[in-house]
Image (tube, one colour):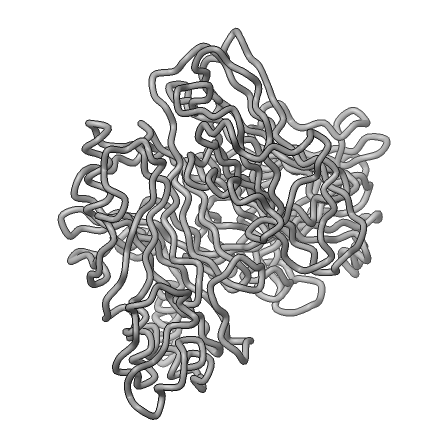
Length: 618
Protein backbone atom coordinates (compact mmCIF):
# COMPACT_ATOMS: atom_id res chain seq x y z
CA UNK A 1 0.00 0.00 0.00
CA UNK A 2 1.03 3.58 -0.55
CA UNK A 3 2.52 5.22 2.52
CA UNK A 4 0.86 8.41 3.45
CA UNK A 5 1.62 11.71 5.00
CA UNK A 6 -0.80 14.54 5.27
CA UNK A 7 0.06 18.19 5.03
CA UNK A 8 -2.70 20.31 6.36
CA UNK A 9 -2.37 24.07 6.01
CA UNK A 10 -5.59 25.63 7.26
CA UNK A 11 -7.57 28.47 8.71
CA UNK A 12 -10.93 28.42 10.54
CA UNK A 13 -13.34 28.86 13.45
CA UNK A 14 -17.02 28.56 14.05
CA UNK A 15 -18.80 31.60 15.53
CA UNK A 16 -15.57 32.89 17.05
CA UNK A 17 -14.70 29.66 18.92
CA UNK A 18 -12.88 26.57 17.69
CA UNK A 19 -15.78 24.16 18.01
CA UNK A 20 -15.94 20.89 16.10
CA UNK A 21 -18.40 20.43 13.24
CA UNK A 22 -21.29 18.48 14.75
CA UNK A 23 -22.13 16.57 11.54
CA UNK A 24 -18.60 15.21 11.17
CA UNK A 25 -17.70 12.16 13.25
CA UNK A 26 -13.94 12.56 13.88
CA UNK A 27 -12.02 15.50 15.30
CA UNK A 28 -8.38 16.27 16.11
CA UNK A 29 -6.54 19.36 17.31
CA UNK A 30 -3.28 19.31 15.40
CA UNK A 31 -1.22 21.99 17.15
CA UNK A 32 -0.20 22.49 20.77
CA UNK A 33 -2.03 25.83 21.10
CA UNK A 34 -5.36 24.51 19.85
CA UNK A 35 -5.39 26.88 16.86
CA UNK A 36 -5.86 24.14 14.26
CA UNK A 37 -8.93 21.88 14.41
CA UNK A 38 -9.57 19.25 11.77
CA UNK A 39 -12.87 17.36 11.53
CA UNK A 40 -13.79 14.67 9.05
CA UNK A 41 -16.07 11.83 8.01
CA UNK A 42 -15.73 9.18 5.33
CA UNK A 43 -17.40 6.32 3.49
CA UNK A 44 -16.11 3.62 1.14
CA UNK A 45 -15.48 6.09 -1.68
CA UNK A 46 -14.53 9.51 -0.31
CA UNK A 47 -13.50 11.57 2.70
CA UNK A 48 -14.86 14.99 3.70
CA UNK A 49 -12.88 17.46 5.83
CA UNK A 50 -13.62 20.67 7.66
CA UNK A 51 -10.61 22.70 8.74
CA UNK A 52 -10.82 25.48 11.37
CA UNK A 53 -7.65 27.50 12.02
CA UNK A 54 -7.04 30.79 13.79
CA UNK A 55 -6.02 32.86 10.75
CA UNK A 56 -7.44 34.92 7.89
CA UNK A 57 -4.91 33.61 5.38
CA UNK A 58 -4.52 30.58 3.12
CA UNK A 59 -4.89 26.94 4.09
CA UNK A 60 -4.28 23.56 2.54
CA UNK A 61 -4.07 19.78 2.96
CA UNK A 62 -1.82 17.23 1.30
CA UNK A 63 -0.57 13.65 1.35
CA UNK A 64 3.16 12.87 1.36
CA UNK A 65 5.20 9.63 1.38
CA UNK A 66 7.48 10.66 4.24
CA UNK A 67 6.24 13.79 6.00
CA UNK A 68 8.14 16.29 3.88
CA UNK A 69 7.08 18.48 0.97
CA UNK A 70 8.72 16.50 -1.88
CA UNK A 71 6.31 13.94 -3.30
CA UNK A 72 3.31 15.47 -1.55
CA UNK A 73 -0.22 15.79 -2.92
CA UNK A 74 -1.45 19.14 -1.56
CA UNK A 75 -4.64 21.18 -1.48
CA UNK A 76 -4.39 24.91 -0.70
CA UNK A 77 -7.41 27.14 -0.12
CA UNK A 78 -8.50 30.51 1.28
CA UNK A 79 -11.42 32.94 1.61
CA UNK A 80 -11.28 36.43 0.10
CA UNK A 81 -14.12 38.98 -0.01
CA UNK A 82 -16.60 36.27 1.01
CA UNK A 83 -15.51 33.94 -1.83
CA UNK A 84 -13.85 30.59 -0.99
CA UNK A 85 -11.08 29.10 -3.15
CA UNK A 86 -9.36 25.69 -3.22
CA UNK A 87 -6.54 24.41 -5.46
CA UNK A 88 -5.13 20.90 -5.91
CA UNK A 89 -1.33 20.96 -6.00
CA UNK A 90 1.73 18.71 -5.81
CA UNK A 91 5.28 19.23 -4.52
CA UNK A 92 8.51 18.08 -6.16
CA UNK A 93 10.78 19.89 -3.72
CA UNK A 94 10.85 22.43 -0.88
CA UNK A 95 9.10 25.18 -2.82
CA UNK A 96 5.66 26.52 -3.64
CA UNK A 97 3.77 23.51 -5.03
CA UNK A 98 2.39 24.06 -8.56
CA UNK A 99 -1.23 23.30 -9.42
CA UNK A 100 -2.06 19.77 -10.57
CA UNK A 101 -3.56 19.28 -14.04
CA UNK A 102 -6.20 17.06 -12.42
CA UNK A 103 -8.11 19.02 -9.76
CA UNK A 104 -9.33 16.22 -7.47
CA UNK A 105 -10.01 18.17 -4.26
CA UNK A 106 -13.56 19.56 -4.34
CA UNK A 107 -14.45 22.70 -2.39
CA UNK A 108 -17.81 22.44 -0.62
CA UNK A 109 -17.98 25.68 1.38
CA UNK A 110 -15.88 28.29 3.11
CA UNK A 111 -16.16 31.47 5.15
CA UNK A 112 -14.32 33.75 7.60
CA UNK A 113 -15.41 35.24 10.91
CA UNK A 114 -13.64 37.68 13.23
CA UNK A 115 -10.85 35.26 14.13
CA UNK A 116 -10.93 32.17 11.94
CA UNK A 117 -11.36 30.79 8.44
CA UNK A 118 -13.42 27.66 7.84
CA UNK A 119 -13.10 25.49 4.73
CA UNK A 120 -14.98 22.30 3.96
CA UNK A 121 -13.78 20.08 1.10
CA UNK A 122 -13.73 16.46 -0.02
CA UNK A 123 -11.79 14.01 -2.16
CA UNK A 124 -12.02 10.42 -3.35
CA UNK A 125 -9.94 8.00 -1.29
CA UNK A 126 -8.38 6.74 -4.54
CA UNK A 127 -8.27 9.23 -7.41
CA UNK A 128 -6.03 7.19 -9.77
CA UNK A 129 -4.03 10.39 -10.38
CA UNK A 130 -0.31 9.60 -10.34
CA UNK A 131 0.33 12.81 -8.35
CA UNK A 132 -2.23 11.95 -5.67
CA UNK A 133 -1.73 9.71 -2.67
CA UNK A 134 -4.17 7.02 -1.60
CA UNK A 135 -6.03 7.59 1.68
CA UNK A 136 -6.43 4.20 3.40
CA UNK A 137 -6.28 2.67 6.89
CA UNK A 138 -2.53 3.17 7.27
CA UNK A 139 -1.06 5.73 9.64
CA UNK A 140 -0.98 9.21 8.12
CA UNK A 141 1.61 11.77 9.10
CA UNK A 142 -0.29 15.01 9.32
CA UNK A 143 1.74 18.12 8.60
CA UNK A 144 -0.13 21.34 9.34
CA UNK A 145 0.67 24.95 8.46
CA UNK A 146 -0.98 28.25 7.60
CA UNK A 147 -0.21 31.85 6.68
CA UNK A 148 -1.98 34.98 7.92
CA UNK A 149 -2.25 36.48 4.43
CA UNK A 150 -4.31 35.41 1.42
CA UNK A 151 -2.28 34.38 -1.65
CA UNK A 152 -1.02 37.05 -4.02
CA UNK A 153 -2.72 36.83 -7.42
CA UNK A 154 0.64 36.67 -9.19
CA UNK A 155 3.08 35.12 -6.68
CA UNK A 156 0.66 32.63 -5.10
CA UNK A 157 0.59 31.55 -1.42
CA UNK A 158 3.35 33.04 0.73
CA UNK A 159 5.67 30.96 2.93
CA UNK A 160 4.02 29.64 6.10
CA UNK A 161 7.00 30.52 8.34
CA UNK A 162 6.69 29.00 11.85
CA UNK A 163 2.98 28.16 11.52
CA UNK A 164 3.59 24.49 10.83
CA UNK A 165 4.00 21.14 12.56
CA UNK A 166 3.61 17.39 12.23
CA UNK A 167 1.20 14.90 13.76
CA UNK A 168 0.44 11.28 12.95
CA UNK A 169 -3.15 10.15 12.63
CA UNK A 170 -5.40 7.45 11.22
CA UNK A 171 -8.22 8.95 9.16
CA UNK A 172 -10.12 5.78 8.23
CA UNK A 173 -10.79 4.69 11.79
CA UNK A 174 -13.66 2.68 13.18
CA UNK A 175 -14.50 4.21 16.56
CA UNK A 176 -16.71 2.00 18.72
CA UNK A 177 -19.24 3.64 20.99
CA UNK A 178 -21.73 1.54 22.93
CA UNK A 179 -25.20 1.54 21.42
CA UNK A 180 -26.64 1.74 24.94
CA UNK A 181 -25.04 3.60 27.85
CA UNK A 182 -25.42 1.96 31.29
CA UNK A 183 -27.72 3.77 33.69
CA UNK A 184 -25.34 3.07 36.59
CA UNK A 185 -21.86 4.37 35.70
CA UNK A 186 -18.94 4.52 38.12
CA UNK A 187 -15.36 5.57 37.47
CA UNK A 188 -11.96 5.07 39.08
CA UNK A 189 -8.56 6.54 38.22
CA UNK A 190 -5.53 4.26 38.23
CA UNK A 191 -2.67 6.76 38.15
CA UNK A 192 0.82 7.46 39.33
CA UNK A 193 1.27 9.53 42.51
CA UNK A 194 3.99 12.14 42.07
CA UNK A 195 6.33 9.74 40.30
CA UNK A 196 9.60 11.37 39.29
CA UNK A 197 10.40 10.45 35.69
CA UNK A 198 13.99 9.13 35.59
CA UNK A 199 16.41 11.35 33.62
CA UNK A 200 17.18 8.73 30.97
CA UNK A 201 15.90 7.85 27.50
CA UNK A 202 13.66 4.94 28.55
CA UNK A 203 12.17 4.02 31.91
CA UNK A 204 9.36 1.69 32.97
CA UNK A 205 7.72 2.81 36.22
CA UNK A 206 5.37 0.62 38.29
CA UNK A 207 2.83 1.38 40.99
CA UNK A 208 0.53 -1.01 42.84
CA UNK A 209 -2.94 0.54 43.07
CA UNK A 210 -5.78 -0.52 45.38
CA UNK A 211 -9.06 -0.83 43.49
CA UNK A 212 -12.46 0.04 44.99
CA UNK A 213 -14.02 -2.78 47.01
CA UNK A 214 -16.78 -4.38 44.96
CA UNK A 215 -19.22 -6.91 46.41
CA UNK A 216 -20.23 -8.24 43.00
CA UNK A 217 -18.79 -8.56 39.53
CA UNK A 218 -18.75 -5.38 37.43
CA UNK A 219 -17.80 -4.67 33.82
CA UNK A 220 -15.37 -2.01 32.58
CA UNK A 221 -16.86 -0.67 29.34
CA UNK A 222 -14.59 2.29 28.58
CA UNK A 223 -10.96 3.31 29.24
CA UNK A 224 -9.70 6.89 29.03
CA UNK A 225 -6.21 8.29 29.40
CA UNK A 226 -5.32 10.74 32.18
CA UNK A 227 -2.11 12.53 31.16
CA UNK A 228 -0.39 15.11 33.35
CA UNK A 229 -0.38 18.43 31.41
CA UNK A 230 3.07 19.06 29.97
CA UNK A 231 4.05 15.37 30.03
CA UNK A 232 2.26 14.38 26.82
CA UNK A 233 5.57 13.93 25.01
CA UNK A 234 7.05 11.69 27.73
CA UNK A 235 4.22 9.26 28.51
CA UNK A 236 4.58 6.76 25.69
CA UNK A 237 2.44 3.79 26.72
CA UNK A 238 0.71 2.29 29.75
CA UNK A 239 -0.51 -1.15 30.77
CA UNK A 240 -2.61 -2.25 33.74
CA UNK A 241 -2.56 -5.82 35.12
CA UNK A 242 -5.18 -7.27 37.47
CA UNK A 243 -3.41 -9.00 40.36
CA UNK A 244 -4.49 -12.37 41.78
CA UNK A 245 -5.60 -12.45 45.43
CA UNK A 246 -2.63 -12.36 47.80
CA UNK A 247 -3.30 -11.01 51.32
CA UNK A 248 0.44 -10.81 52.00
CA UNK A 249 1.42 -8.75 48.94
CA UNK A 250 3.63 -5.74 49.70
CA UNK A 251 1.46 -2.62 49.86
CA UNK A 252 2.94 0.88 49.84
CA UNK A 253 1.28 3.96 51.36
CA UNK A 254 -1.10 5.76 49.01
CA UNK A 255 1.29 8.67 48.55
CA UNK A 256 4.20 6.37 47.62
CA UNK A 257 5.33 7.08 44.01
CA UNK A 258 6.14 3.45 43.16
CA UNK A 259 9.30 1.85 41.81
CA UNK A 260 11.18 1.39 38.57
CA UNK A 261 9.91 -1.87 37.06
CA UNK A 262 12.14 -4.92 36.58
CA UNK A 263 14.66 -3.71 39.16
CA UNK A 264 15.52 -5.02 42.65
CA UNK A 265 13.81 -1.93 44.14
CA UNK A 266 10.40 -3.15 43.02
CA UNK A 267 8.87 -5.61 45.54
CA UNK A 268 9.25 -9.11 44.18
CA UNK A 269 5.62 -10.03 44.84
CA UNK A 270 4.45 -7.21 42.54
CA UNK A 271 5.79 -9.31 39.65
CA UNK A 272 3.02 -11.83 40.40
CA UNK A 273 0.59 -9.35 38.84
CA UNK A 274 2.16 -9.93 35.41
CA UNK A 275 0.68 -13.44 35.68
CA UNK A 276 -2.76 -11.94 36.18
CA UNK A 277 -4.96 -10.48 33.45
CA UNK A 278 -4.01 -7.58 31.24
CA UNK A 279 -6.90 -5.16 31.84
CA UNK A 280 -5.91 -2.28 29.58
CA UNK A 281 -3.24 -1.17 27.13
CA UNK A 282 -2.88 2.45 26.03
CA UNK A 283 -0.22 4.15 23.92
CA UNK A 284 0.46 7.56 22.45
CA UNK A 285 -2.15 8.39 19.84
CA UNK A 286 -4.83 6.19 21.35
CA UNK A 287 -8.00 8.00 22.31
CA UNK A 288 -10.76 6.55 24.45
CA UNK A 289 -11.14 2.78 24.13
CA UNK A 290 -14.78 1.68 24.24
CA UNK A 291 -15.88 -1.95 24.22
CA UNK A 292 -18.77 -3.12 22.05
CA UNK A 293 -22.14 -2.96 23.82
CA UNK A 294 -22.20 -6.75 24.42
CA UNK A 295 -18.68 -6.89 25.92
CA UNK A 296 -17.11 -5.69 29.18
CA UNK A 297 -13.90 -6.34 31.11
CA UNK A 298 -14.65 -8.12 34.43
CA UNK A 299 -13.57 -6.71 37.79
CA UNK A 300 -14.78 -7.67 41.25
CA UNK A 301 -15.09 -11.35 40.26
CA UNK A 302 -13.64 -14.34 42.13
CA UNK A 303 -10.23 -13.89 40.46
CA UNK A 304 -9.91 -10.25 41.48
CA UNK A 305 -7.38 -9.54 44.24
CA UNK A 306 -8.51 -5.93 44.64
CA UNK A 307 -5.20 -4.60 43.33
CA UNK A 308 -3.80 -3.69 39.92
CA UNK A 309 -0.28 -3.00 38.72
CA UNK A 310 0.11 0.15 36.63
CA UNK A 311 3.17 0.17 34.37
CA UNK A 312 4.08 3.35 32.47
CA UNK A 313 6.73 3.56 29.78
CA UNK A 314 8.38 6.99 29.93
CA UNK A 315 10.31 8.26 26.91
CA UNK A 316 12.71 11.02 28.01
CA UNK A 317 15.24 11.53 25.17
CA UNK A 318 16.31 14.95 26.54
CA UNK A 319 16.91 13.31 29.94
CA UNK A 320 15.03 16.04 31.76
CA UNK A 321 15.38 16.03 35.54
CA UNK A 322 12.78 16.67 38.22
CA UNK A 323 9.71 15.99 36.07
CA UNK A 324 6.81 14.77 38.23
CA UNK A 325 4.02 12.66 36.75
CA UNK A 326 0.50 11.65 37.80
CA UNK A 327 -0.62 10.03 34.55
CA UNK A 328 -2.62 6.85 34.24
CA UNK A 329 -5.97 5.51 33.07
CA UNK A 330 -9.58 6.18 34.02
CA UNK A 331 -11.86 3.13 34.08
CA UNK A 332 -15.59 3.56 33.51
CA UNK A 333 -17.45 0.53 34.87
CA UNK A 334 -20.95 -0.65 35.74
CA UNK A 335 -22.75 -3.40 37.69
CA UNK A 336 -24.99 -3.86 34.63
CA UNK A 337 -23.21 -6.91 33.23
CA UNK A 338 -22.88 -7.45 29.51
CA UNK A 339 -23.15 -10.76 27.67
CA UNK A 340 -19.41 -11.48 27.38
CA UNK A 341 -16.22 -10.94 29.37
CA UNK A 342 -13.51 -9.25 27.30
CA UNK A 343 -9.94 -10.54 27.12
CA UNK A 344 -6.63 -9.16 25.87
CA UNK A 345 -4.08 -11.43 24.16
CA UNK A 346 -0.53 -10.37 23.29
CA UNK A 347 1.18 -12.16 20.37
CA UNK A 348 4.87 -11.25 20.63
CA UNK A 349 8.40 -11.97 19.54
CA UNK A 350 10.42 -12.81 22.67
CA UNK A 351 11.79 -9.54 24.05
CA UNK A 352 15.47 -10.48 24.22
CA UNK A 353 18.59 -11.04 22.11
CA UNK A 354 16.79 -13.61 19.94
CA UNK A 355 15.25 -10.58 18.22
CA UNK A 356 17.95 -9.14 15.95
CA UNK A 357 17.46 -6.36 13.40
CA UNK A 358 20.74 -6.04 11.46
CA UNK A 359 21.92 -2.68 10.09
CA UNK A 360 21.81 -1.57 6.43
CA UNK A 361 18.43 -3.24 5.79
CA UNK A 362 15.50 -1.28 4.37
CA UNK A 363 13.04 -4.20 4.43
CA UNK A 364 13.96 -6.61 7.25
CA UNK A 365 11.14 -8.90 8.40
CA UNK A 366 10.54 -10.48 11.81
CA UNK A 367 7.83 -13.13 12.32
CA UNK A 368 6.11 -14.23 15.50
CA UNK A 369 3.08 -16.45 16.09
CA UNK A 370 0.69 -18.03 18.58
CA UNK A 371 1.10 -21.76 18.16
CA UNK A 372 -1.90 -23.80 17.14
CA UNK A 373 -1.84 -26.19 20.10
CA UNK A 374 -1.92 -23.41 22.70
CA UNK A 375 -4.70 -21.48 21.00
CA UNK A 376 -6.83 -24.59 20.41
CA UNK A 377 -6.53 -25.77 24.03
CA UNK A 378 -7.75 -22.48 25.50
CA UNK A 379 -10.53 -22.12 22.94
CA UNK A 380 -11.59 -25.63 24.01
CA UNK A 381 -11.74 -24.41 27.62
CA UNK A 382 -14.16 -21.58 26.85
CA UNK A 383 -16.22 -23.88 24.62
CA UNK A 384 -16.57 -21.59 21.60
CA UNK A 385 -14.47 -19.62 19.09
CA UNK A 386 -13.19 -16.21 20.15
CA UNK A 387 -14.06 -12.99 18.33
CA UNK A 388 -11.46 -10.24 17.93
CA UNK A 389 -12.87 -6.69 17.85
CA UNK A 390 -9.72 -4.59 18.20
CA UNK A 391 -5.97 -4.67 17.63
CA UNK A 392 -2.99 -2.53 18.67
CA UNK A 393 0.31 -3.22 16.88
CA UNK A 394 3.40 -2.34 18.91
CA UNK A 395 7.03 -1.94 17.88
CA UNK A 396 9.71 0.73 18.25
CA UNK A 397 11.62 3.23 16.12
CA UNK A 398 12.76 1.05 13.20
CA UNK A 399 9.35 -0.50 12.43
CA UNK A 400 7.76 0.58 9.14
CA UNK A 401 5.05 -2.02 8.44
CA UNK A 402 3.07 -4.33 10.73
CA UNK A 403 0.59 -7.04 9.87
CA UNK A 404 -1.43 -9.52 11.93
CA UNK A 405 -3.06 -12.38 10.06
CA UNK A 406 -4.71 -15.73 10.57
CA UNK A 407 -3.78 -19.04 8.95
CA UNK A 408 -6.68 -21.47 8.66
CA UNK A 409 -6.45 -24.67 6.58
CA UNK A 410 -3.37 -23.23 4.85
CA UNK A 411 -5.09 -20.00 3.80
CA UNK A 412 -3.87 -16.66 5.19
CA UNK A 413 -6.35 -13.86 5.96
CA UNK A 414 -5.22 -10.42 7.14
CA UNK A 415 -6.78 -9.29 10.43
CA UNK A 416 -5.10 -5.89 10.66
CA UNK A 417 -2.17 -4.13 9.00
CA UNK A 418 -0.41 -0.78 8.77
CA UNK A 419 2.00 -0.19 5.88
CA UNK A 420 3.11 3.17 7.27
CA UNK A 421 3.60 2.37 10.97
CA UNK A 422 4.73 5.19 13.25
CA UNK A 423 6.17 4.63 16.74
CA UNK A 424 4.58 7.92 17.79
CA UNK A 425 1.02 6.70 17.09
CA UNK A 426 0.34 3.39 18.86
CA UNK A 427 -3.27 3.35 17.77
CA UNK A 428 -5.91 0.83 18.93
CA UNK A 429 -7.70 -0.18 15.73
CA UNK A 430 -11.30 -1.26 16.19
CA UNK A 431 -12.10 -3.70 13.40
CA UNK A 432 -14.91 -3.03 10.94
CA UNK A 433 -16.16 -6.56 11.58
CA UNK A 434 -15.40 -8.99 14.40
CA UNK A 435 -12.78 -11.55 13.39
CA UNK A 436 -13.54 -15.14 14.40
CA UNK A 437 -10.64 -17.35 15.58
CA UNK A 438 -11.37 -21.04 16.08
CA UNK A 439 -9.59 -24.29 16.97
CA UNK A 440 -6.82 -25.15 14.55
CA UNK A 441 -6.07 -21.52 13.65
CA UNK A 442 -2.64 -19.88 13.91
CA UNK A 443 -2.21 -16.15 14.64
CA UNK A 444 0.78 -14.58 12.86
CA UNK A 445 2.38 -11.15 13.28
CA UNK A 446 4.94 -9.82 10.80
CA UNK A 447 7.00 -6.69 11.50
CA UNK A 448 9.07 -4.99 8.80
CA UNK A 449 11.94 -2.70 9.81
CA UNK A 450 14.09 -0.10 8.05
CA UNK A 451 17.59 -0.01 9.55
CA UNK A 452 19.34 1.33 6.45
CA UNK A 453 20.65 4.29 8.47
CA UNK A 454 22.11 2.09 11.23
CA UNK A 455 25.68 0.80 11.39
CA UNK A 456 25.08 -1.63 14.28
CA UNK A 457 22.46 -4.28 14.95
CA UNK A 458 19.45 -3.43 17.16
CA UNK A 459 18.26 -6.12 19.59
CA UNK A 460 14.96 -6.90 21.27
CA UNK A 461 14.40 -5.09 24.55
CA UNK A 462 12.19 -2.75 26.54
CA UNK A 463 14.11 0.42 25.69
CA UNK A 464 12.94 2.79 22.97
CA UNK A 465 16.24 2.21 21.16
CA UNK A 466 15.67 -1.55 21.29
CA UNK A 467 13.01 -3.26 19.18
CA UNK A 468 9.80 -5.15 19.74
CA UNK A 469 7.27 -6.94 17.53
CA UNK A 470 3.89 -7.61 19.05
CA UNK A 471 0.18 -7.47 18.36
CA UNK A 472 -2.29 -6.81 21.18
CA UNK A 473 -5.69 -8.36 20.45
CA UNK A 474 -8.93 -7.28 22.16
CA UNK A 475 -11.43 -10.14 22.00
CA UNK A 476 -14.23 -12.13 23.69
CA UNK A 477 -15.11 -14.44 25.40
CA UNK A 478 -12.07 -14.21 27.69
CA UNK A 479 -9.64 -17.12 27.78
CA UNK A 480 -7.12 -17.83 30.53
CA UNK A 481 -4.18 -17.27 28.20
CA UNK A 482 -2.41 -13.87 28.46
CA UNK A 483 0.31 -14.04 25.81
CA UNK A 484 1.84 -16.15 23.07
CA UNK A 485 5.48 -15.66 22.22
CA UNK A 486 7.91 -17.18 19.76
CA UNK A 487 11.47 -16.69 18.60
CA UNK A 488 13.97 -18.34 16.27
CA UNK A 489 15.88 -21.15 18.01
CA UNK A 490 19.18 -19.74 19.35
CA UNK A 491 21.22 -22.48 17.62
CA UNK A 492 19.62 -21.66 14.27
CA UNK A 493 20.35 -17.95 14.80
CA UNK A 494 24.00 -18.72 15.58
CA UNK A 495 24.38 -21.20 12.71
CA UNK A 496 24.31 -18.16 10.41
CA UNK A 497 27.72 -17.30 11.90
CA UNK A 498 29.05 -20.89 11.75
CA UNK A 499 28.10 -22.17 15.22
CA UNK A 500 27.45 -25.93 15.27
CA UNK A 501 26.55 -26.71 18.90
CA UNK A 502 25.52 -24.78 22.03
CA UNK A 503 24.97 -25.69 25.68
CA UNK A 504 21.29 -25.42 26.63
CA UNK A 505 21.47 -27.73 29.66
CA UNK A 506 21.87 -24.97 32.24
CA UNK A 507 19.00 -22.45 32.27
CA UNK A 508 20.34 -18.95 31.69
CA UNK A 509 19.68 -15.74 29.80
CA UNK A 510 20.04 -16.19 26.06
CA UNK A 511 22.94 -13.70 25.97
CA UNK A 512 25.07 -16.03 28.12
CA UNK A 513 24.45 -19.34 26.30
CA UNK A 514 27.94 -20.89 25.83
CA UNK A 515 29.18 -22.09 22.45
CA UNK A 516 30.40 -25.73 22.32
CA UNK A 517 31.37 -26.19 18.66
CA UNK A 518 33.34 -25.36 16.62
CA UNK A 519 36.36 -25.41 18.91
CA UNK A 520 37.60 -21.98 17.84
CA UNK A 521 34.35 -20.46 19.23
CA UNK A 522 34.15 -22.52 22.42
CA UNK A 523 35.20 -19.59 24.58
CA UNK A 524 32.37 -17.40 23.23
CA UNK A 525 28.76 -16.82 24.29
CA UNK A 526 25.64 -16.18 22.24
CA UNK A 527 26.07 -12.41 22.69
CA UNK A 528 29.75 -12.58 21.67
CA UNK A 529 28.86 -14.30 18.40
CA UNK A 530 25.94 -12.12 17.31
CA UNK A 531 27.89 -8.96 18.16
CA UNK A 532 30.86 -10.17 16.09
CA UNK A 533 28.88 -10.50 12.85
CA UNK A 534 30.03 -7.94 10.26
CA UNK A 535 26.87 -6.83 8.49
CA UNK A 536 26.20 -5.47 5.03
CA UNK A 537 23.01 -5.10 3.02
CA UNK A 538 23.27 -8.48 1.34
CA UNK A 539 24.05 -10.30 4.59
CA UNK A 540 21.08 -8.65 6.31
CA UNK A 541 18.78 -9.89 3.53
CA UNK A 542 20.20 -13.43 3.74
CA UNK A 543 19.80 -13.40 7.53
CA UNK A 544 16.09 -12.62 7.23
CA UNK A 545 15.62 -15.59 4.89
CA UNK A 546 17.79 -17.78 7.12
CA UNK A 547 15.61 -17.13 10.17
CA UNK A 548 12.39 -17.94 8.32
CA UNK A 549 13.71 -21.30 7.15
CA UNK A 550 14.73 -22.61 10.57
CA UNK A 551 13.26 -23.85 13.84
CA UNK A 552 11.27 -21.60 16.18
CA UNK A 553 10.56 -21.96 19.90
CA UNK A 554 7.02 -20.96 20.89
CA UNK A 555 5.18 -20.83 24.20
CA UNK A 556 2.21 -19.19 25.90
CA UNK A 557 1.46 -17.89 29.38
CA UNK A 558 -1.78 -17.84 31.29
CA UNK A 559 -3.47 -16.56 34.41
CA UNK A 560 -3.25 -19.67 36.55
CA UNK A 561 -6.96 -20.44 36.81
CA UNK A 562 -6.68 -22.85 33.90
CA UNK A 563 -6.63 -26.62 34.43
CA UNK A 564 -4.00 -26.86 31.69
CA UNK A 565 -0.37 -27.58 32.58
CA UNK A 566 2.17 -24.79 32.76
CA UNK A 567 4.76 -26.10 30.29
CA UNK A 568 2.89 -28.30 27.87
CA UNK A 569 2.73 -25.68 25.12
CA UNK A 570 6.44 -24.93 24.81
CA UNK A 571 7.50 -26.51 21.52
CA UNK A 572 9.97 -26.37 18.68
CA UNK A 573 8.60 -26.19 15.16
CA UNK A 574 9.12 -24.53 11.78
CA UNK A 575 7.61 -21.13 11.14
CA UNK A 576 3.94 -21.64 10.17
CA UNK A 577 3.41 -20.78 6.51
CA UNK A 578 0.28 -20.42 4.44
CA UNK A 579 -0.04 -22.40 1.22
CA UNK A 580 -2.38 -19.65 -0.01
CA UNK A 581 -1.00 -16.20 0.99
CA UNK A 582 -3.31 -13.32 1.81
CA UNK A 583 -4.90 -11.81 -1.27
CA UNK A 584 -3.42 -8.55 -2.53
CA UNK A 585 -5.72 -5.50 -2.45
CA UNK A 586 -7.73 -4.93 -5.60
CA UNK A 587 -6.12 -2.48 -8.02
CA UNK A 588 -9.07 -0.20 -8.67
CA UNK A 589 -6.99 1.86 -11.10
CA UNK A 590 -6.16 -1.03 -13.44
CA UNK A 591 -7.68 -1.20 -16.91
CA UNK A 592 -9.72 -4.21 -15.84
CA UNK A 593 -11.64 -2.05 -13.37
CA UNK A 594 -12.46 0.51 -16.01
CA UNK A 595 -10.28 3.31 -14.64
CA UNK A 596 -7.29 4.79 -16.41
CA UNK A 597 -4.17 4.34 -14.28
CA UNK A 598 -0.76 5.86 -15.06
CA UNK A 599 0.22 3.04 -17.43
CA UNK A 600 -3.03 3.46 -19.36
CA UNK A 601 -2.55 7.23 -19.52
CA UNK A 602 0.96 6.82 -20.92
CA UNK A 603 -0.25 4.35 -23.54
CA UNK A 604 -3.02 6.71 -24.65
CA UNK A 605 -0.49 9.51 -25.04
CA UNK A 606 1.74 7.31 -27.19
CA UNK A 607 -1.19 6.25 -29.35
CA UNK A 608 -2.22 9.90 -29.80
CA UNK A 609 1.30 10.81 -30.92
CA UNK A 610 1.34 7.91 -33.37
CA UNK A 611 -2.02 8.96 -34.83
CA UNK A 612 -0.82 12.56 -35.14
CA UNK A 613 2.32 11.42 -36.99
CA UNK A 614 0.29 9.29 -39.38
CA UNK A 615 -2.27 12.03 -40.07
CA UNK A 616 0.42 14.67 -40.62
CA UNK A 617 1.86 12.63 -43.51
CA UNK A 618 -1.48 12.35 -45.34
